[in-house]
Image (tube, rainbow, N blue to C red; front, side, top):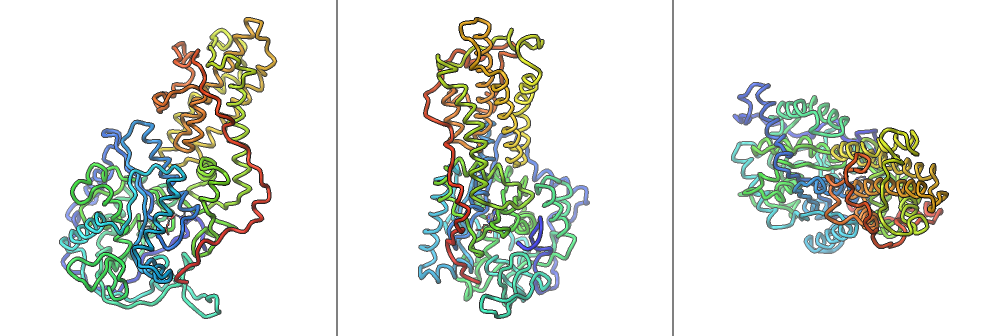
Length: 598
Ligand code: ME8
């Protein structure tokens, strides 16, 4: 990407302006204050009350195989879904593939396949990747499905019936690669690989072409003030904040009407405009409706649609935070509760993308580093607000330090037969570790207890705002403190034959296992496999792993601990095997597929 935090275009598309007709916006008769209230009500349905949650990833284009960036979006949404399940929510989680449009039509042609066969093949690759990486989606949507065609057709008809779509003519730049319309200010001159002068998108660098055709227009311009009201009235509608701010900035500029169809003669691979066989629905309108299709639109979407949350990359913010809410307002539907935006993975400073050819193969990496290893790395290292450069060495260093040595080492120490010959969750002795601070524990130990006791609330806050990296930072800091606690008291030096030493030794192990149980429970949304291994080794049963079960160190508070005296689970080997291969970064990133339209 060419620019900084928001490497996204500064304004929306250029279109041939047509005279406004008599369209009246659905809420234009309300005062500004009332409109904010309407929008607030429609988008802040209490999810705490009905405990339902609906999270989506973008649906991915099938013009090339998935890369690590796609997996990052999926893992981010999967983490949110698993977290909500742990909190006792009914959660729906959808991902899938975006299969229509010129880009896919051209990719299928270049591959010499009919479009559906081509799409099925690549869509299966995405599905296989997500299944291999424990992405626990509850629905996988393909826009070529019949249920989706029905939803899009219905949605279009509603917009039409409300007078929001009219026949017009578009003249301007179009990027097939981005499936996006651009103004003259959003393009620049460049040279292609043969030295020929071409125009490219300032934002993505993708080639643009001049197009002029008759098609249908959506009255996007009519929604500017409602979009501003929505964003101003809901400061958490787009998160993190810099992206919210960016959308508000875009809305300060002109918001022309949007072309929402293409001539069928140019674009055959898509959903026809109802009642006009000569036109195909614009791929972005088609694609965005996928979120409604999965929710059960048009008949039974209310339950899920009222609690919708989108995870998107910053490259598609404009489509999700301007076009999509405008379409929804037009159709009289509630707006999503939140749009969570993340930045990009780069390689050598350039956005990892199919078109640049610098993609990292996530399946290959999950075989090298394990599925949980890749998940942990992406969520620990990925910062939504800023781009992050990928190298294999970073993965190896991080996973060795935090999963193999720190967390794995702690589990190993506390369950090793040398320290724990009875292989049980030993007893806690309140006299060794009293609340009055007169036992064998020292001030740092009390600090550690405080840190671990407050950890679930800290992690909760970060999971809620989809800042998994901050949650993992906090967990890693606590794991280090627990290791420090064990190291400080060196239980291996205590004498088991001495009653007091024996009780103190058991207490050290009990406290450490309680810490590990807390970490294992809180880590489930990130590394489900490792968490399961850890909790099973501690003898924590599947029904004892929810958020409400954490209840750290009850014996210190003077209440019973259900685990005390219980046999540990089976030893299934080290938690995470150390990774070797220091020279991996010398390998060049693999090109999976060449760009079609460049
Ligand atoms: O835009 N780093 O599909 P797409 C992080 N079909 N995430 C990345 C990434 C990177 N380098 N590259 C891609 C489309 N992504 C449309 C979406 S939704 C109704 C339609 C992720 O295959 C990120 O989530 O180009 C980005 O927004 C998405 O993949 C784009 O995937």
